[in-house]
Image (tube, rainbow, N blue to C red; front, side, top):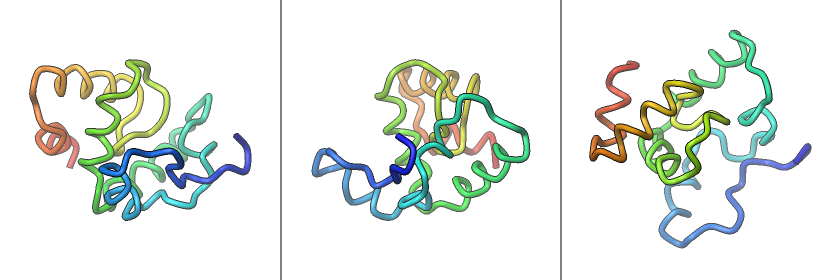
Length: 102
């Protein structure tokens, strides 16, 4: 994965439009899926997410992914990401979930 960029290869057509607007597009994938987060790095990543025009769409996409806590999705990681996926499975929108963290 090293050297790969967040270009969202192999996507459904419906996913492509929002992903083209993602603030992380073109950045090193390893940055967004580290094995260990340092607080400063995590704060920098989440700041990018919270300024992203498609943050909610990203979190919604993550809701359909595996139930692990790996990666930064919509500005959430770890336990927050797991809680967001659980809430979305119960019908809570990504937009409503993200309002907790603004």
